[in-house]
Amino acid sequence: SDVYKRQVSTQSTGSDTGAMCSRWVSRGVLRATKRHGARMSTSAVGNKRFQLNHAMLRVSDPEVSLDFYQELLGMHMISRVDNDASTNFFLANLGNDSPVPPLGIDEAKRFLHEGSYRFALELTHNHGTEQGFRGYHNGRGDPAGFEHIGVLVEDLAATVEGVESAGGRVAEHTQDGAVIQDPDGYHLQLSPKVPSSRFGGMEEIAVRGVRLLIRSPEESLRFYQDLCGMKLFEVEHDLEAAATVYTLARPEPNLVIAPGTDQAKQWIRSCPGGILELKHWHGTEMREDRPYSTPQMSAEHRGYGHIGLLVEDVAKATAKMHAAGTQVQSWPGEGLPAKSAYVCDPDGYWVELMPRYKAPVYREMGKVVLDGEWTEAPPQKIRGLYTGLALRMSTMH
Image (cartoon, rainbow, N blue to C red; front, side):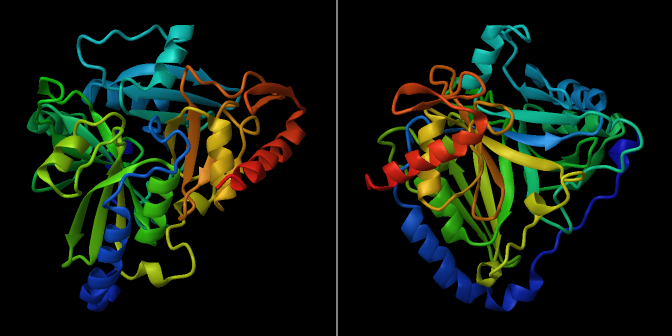
């Protein structure tokens, strides 16, 4: 299909900052790593239960995309949400012996919000894009921001061959994997699964995580660790390319693992939830603007949507982030899904805060929970109620 054969966008390497690479590494990278990489966050609301749950991509033709991800990459649909103007498909790899609840029943909704599948890919179809749509921006080129989705496969060679045979695009062969493009041109970094003592065999997780470009490592690491309860497990420097990649994942309570060790590398390949890779081109931290404008581009063609975090209490998590200066894009009840909230990280990327099944914070439009009690309120009053909660929480620290 022609949709698989789009031109691969080129990515600026930031070569004009190469001269300051060594100076920046000695100051910025090591400073950020020292401050934020050697400890586990303790200030996030319910950080023991924060979990990177999914990444969302917009697709133009769901039939083609579902065929690609299910037939070629072996994923299963674990949830489908039909709205008036869009449909959301959640895909995950469950293993051959894992039961999949039938779509649409309460057990399927519970399964989605429990997160036992570790990480999912949400494909959002805005109705009407099947015909005559010129396509979504895949995150590469200008404006840049979203890099790729990481996927683990059991047989790398067979998967690549299957993609090529189906008319798919293999954009790059890497040292230990390959980069392919899905029907909408999004890049997927394929890596082989490895034996894992955690699961007593091969790794089960298929969708590994997501990589985003960031301006300031210090600001981003502070946000994702202090407010989102994640931990830095690996730092990879590429001095030739003048770039550094920070890998974060959910820690276990009292887990003490030094970044970059063999134990850390093993953990990020088998931990609960997905992993978040933050790539920094050296020198961008000195810019005052947001150089990665994927979140700010025209909504009509913005492909990458957001990452989703499972949290115990959406109301309190949102309020604490707001009190810490985080931009709240929508409070619970102001958007879809109604139980979720959306905040922006330091680069403007959206982060969905979604409730775990056993801790819903929103029952229906116009009802919010504050201090453990349900409060009746019209939707236009919700922002004020949550702002008040944020103010109360800010005085507690």
